Image (tube, rainbow, N blue to C red; front, side):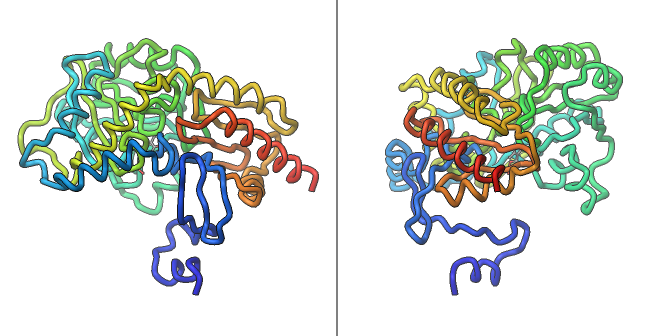
Amino acid sequence: MNTQERWHGAMQNNYGTPTITLVRGDGVEVWDDEERRYLDFLGGIATNILGHSHPAIVKAVSSQIRELSHVSNLYAHKPGVELAEKLRDMTNDPSARIFFCNSGAEANEAAIKISRLTGRTQIIAALGAFHGRTTGALSITGQEGKRRPFEPLLPDVRFVPYGDVKAMSRAVSKKTALVILEAIQGENGVVVPPIGYLKAVRELCDTKGALFAIDAVQTGMGRTGEWFGFESEGIAPDVITLAKGLGGGLPLGAMITLGKRVPAFKPGEHGSTFGGNPISCAAANAAVDHLVKRDLLWKVAQAGEFLKAELSMIGGVQEVRGRGLLLGIVLDSNVATELANKAASHGLLLNAPNKNVIRIAPALVVSKAQLKEFVKIFAKSLGEVLNG
Ligand SMILES: *Cc1c(COP(=O)(O)O)cnc(C)c1O
């Protein structure tokens, strides 16, 4: 039996059965069980910020696991404290405080719970938003198809069109505990809100005394050329949630509270057994140190500009959305899935979040030569798909 058949015979079918089995990775390249090489432009869905098997991650994880692996949160450990300090400093707010968990959904669960401590219950989220699959995170995910089979979910959640200040101003009131938005809607096809939107929402939240959370799970950790993806809007939210790239490829999530208005958890009010374990934190510290040492955020922004220019010249491409290395390539026609399959057959891994959009989120260490190789295979694959 091959791996696909074994998967089918043992796994839940929630992902369908994948057609490719990967066995090895190195930087932005991966190999399957038939020794075919692929350029990985999805990066574990915006997760492997240093790529596969990066020496800095390998070293940090292996020396940490030799020294101290898991201790629970009843004991302090240095990798966790060091990472919390780094994240606090990234926010430029000395009052920022970190809660570690294991995933994006859990980070948003923490945000939902902290918003309850305001004494209010209403949450406002955006249509098209994705905040995770656990029951609470699903309740605030603005995609009805994902929610409906699992209803009833959390009550008192309202959805408004993303990017629409007027709709938001009609929705936010003195009953609103939390407004949660992505800086760029990743799963929805890399949808960028109009400039000034996040700032206007910040002001509405201030007026009504509601907390404002930015879900930076996908946009965070340098992916947009900024640490969290909202800094260019000149705002500070009350809550930031992180995961995906945070652990440098290991499972790690975080909720950051900032500013004066946000409540704080008291001892016993929240927790996670594995959250912020020493090994994931060691990997995260190594990843952040590498990004800083190599000045990669600036290069990520440049890479995004290069790709936008190159990709928009390809026939069949309507528009390229996003920032840095989180880009949505909007096609003229609904061939995204076909294109992703064609690209895979030419050794390029892409993702089609919807019918006419290809999403790319490669490692932040991707080289210029690899960007050029990507553009070449992308153009060739799209040409083949469009011309039969
Ligand atoms: C992926 C994602 C999540 C969920 O993260 P998990 O680690 O899969 O739970 C939440 N929010 C956003 C914006 C995401 O992209």
